[in-house]
Image (cartoon, rainbow, N blue to C red; front, side, top):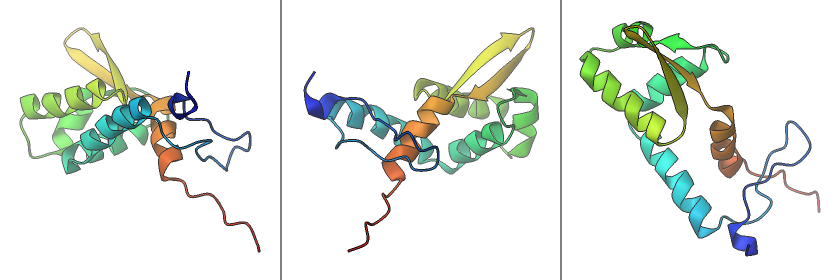
Length: 120
């Protein structure tokens, strides 16, 4: 595997996450899809509602009333987030429960983290 296609790597320090090398083409395409999914205010807000549950699952019945949008529109936005690999879901009877995928969110965070400047 060429160096530019290596996966994103985080440092061992829990608070200092940066890219170990510049993004390869495949990684950039994957991440761009996730960032594109988040470029919509409704989807960004949906993700924040899901993530704010601290790892717990949230029912779509709790998400829909937070918006002045129809249930099919909310379902579409959730589908886009799922296809981007940011969330996952499980159907239980008539309701669907959602949760965030932490590894995917960490990869996005790693790209946006600027390494601390080294003192001269």
